[in-house]
Structure formats: structure tokens, C-alpha cells
Image 1 (cartoon, helix red, strand yellow):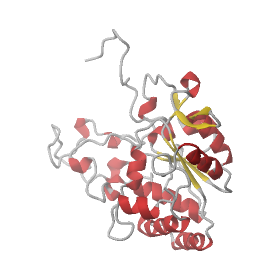
Image 2 (cartoon, helix red, strand yellow; image 1 turned 60 degrees about the horizontal axis):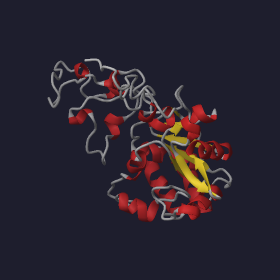
Image 3 (cartoon, helix red, strand yellow; image 1 turned 45 degrees about the horizontal axis):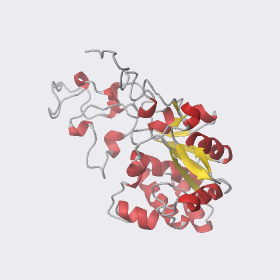
Image 4 (cartoon, helix red, strand yellow; image 1 turned 135 degrees about the vertical axis):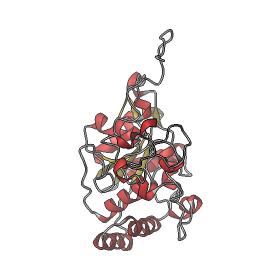
Amino acid sequence: MTVSRRDFLKYCTASAAVLGLSAGEIRALARALASGSGPTVLWLQGASCSGCSVSFLNHVASSSPYDAADVLINVVSLAYHPTLMAAAGETAVAAALQASTAPGHVLVVEGGVPTAFGGNACWAWTENGADVTFAQAVMSQAQTAAAIVCVGQCSAYGGIPAAPPNPTAVKSVQQLTGLQTINVAGCPPHPDWMVWTIAKLVAGAPIPLDSHGRPKELFAQRVHDQCPRKEKDEEAESFGQHGGCLEELGCRGLWSQTKGNCPKVKFNAKANWCIGADAPCQGCTNPAFPGTEPFFHEEGEEEDD
């Protein structure tokens, strides 16, 4: 589905005020809205669960856009998105190829990039009768993009698809292309983090990155350092025990690279967040997520107790 760039920029501008963009950046967004100079956005999906797209659309507010339906019908202004757009087949491919030639276009990638089997574990589309692997599509589109935004752990760092033993040899976009990427970490990322990043790009504002390619403004503090249960005398001894610190239950919010403002923005329209639901933080913004333990073992190999 394609809706006007004006509606999308209106959405970004409204969200930008909430997210804390400066007055100058909001004015730049307004100028882009008036002139139609905002970049074309091309969104590709690879080895993932589509959870980042779902999170992006999980916007609930008291003003327009009110909910996911409002976003889908009145706000979304992506030139190409295989899940959201109405077009399919050759028409959709043509839209993707046309978007990739737009000056200053932004490439958004969701999902890891399988490279084993010649990349044939994941196809992006068929072009002129030939199957195009996701790796080929990402490599091609990345070369002409003004910016590459990786939404979620899978495209940014490999994530769950790249977890050991990684049979399809999934790589991150940066590993594949060798190009700098803006990594909006999380599994999935908070919708505000994605909107904030796009709004910054539309405004032409710089996005300083940390050593892992994450926007510093979004991922400045360790989750544990902001947790309301930090250093509480009471520690939870079992799952579901309300109010106690979850350190002894394996909370990964203490990991040095588990960063994000989750305790502040929460999820599902600020309804709650992992620790608020008495579940340990899984460290999903950490580049090392989900960890180094294999997701499965070879036949006959005994699992550790």
C-alpha cells in the first residue's frame, strides 16, 4: 500500500515532537513535508519473523494516527514493503527497482541475510524470470542508498537466524556489504525508535552512532541503570514474583551492551515492559543476543543438563 509522502512526514513530525527532536529538526521536517523532498523508503525483508514490521505498526495514540489500522490506511508511505504493499509479483518488483533509483533513497532492511547454498535459502523476488536471492537484492540496493537502516537484531547483527549452528550462514547487512549501517537494535525494536530514526533522516539531521552502529541518543544507557528495581533489597527467587530485582533469575539488563530506554518508553502504548511483567530482560538490544548456546544439536549429540 502506498500513501502520500506528505502523510508519512506528517506522522514523523508528530512523532518527532514526542520523541524529543529539536525545534530545528522539526522545522526541517516541516520544510520537507511542504516541498516533498523527503527520501523514498525501500523496505526489504529477509530471514526474520516480520516482528519488526509488526512493532513499527503497533502505534496507539490519542491523536492521529490512532492505531495500526490508521497507520496502514492513512500513514504508511513506503515505496516498497513486501508485507504491507497491495502490489505483488512483477508490479511489486518494478516498484522496488524504481525506488532504488530515486535520489537519496533510504534502504530499510529487516531480517538477516542467508549466504549458504548460494544465498538460495532466502529469495527476495523474481526478475525477468530469474530468482533473485535476498543477499543479491540487499547488495544491489545498498550500493545506491543514501542511508541503510537495519531494523532489529537480525539485519543489524544476525540475531536469532544467525544463532549457532547457523546452518544458512546468516550475516548482518554490514557484514555482507561492508557498508556503514544505522542499527536500530531490539528484537523487535520499539516503534518509536524506528520512527525517530526515519524522522532524523528526513530532517537531514546527523545520527551519531556508537561502536555497534546504534544511534547514541537511543542507546545511551544500560537498561539496568534505568531499572526501577535496581539494587532493591528484595530479589525475586522465582518467576512471577512481583517487585523484586530479577538479577538472580538471569536478567540480561545488566549486560554492559544491553542499552535502550525501555524502562521509559515501555511497549504496547506504554502499557508495560519485560521487567514490569516480572520477566527478566533478555538483552535483545545487545549485539551478542541471543547468545552463543546452540539452538539445536546434531543428531546423537547429547545436550548438557
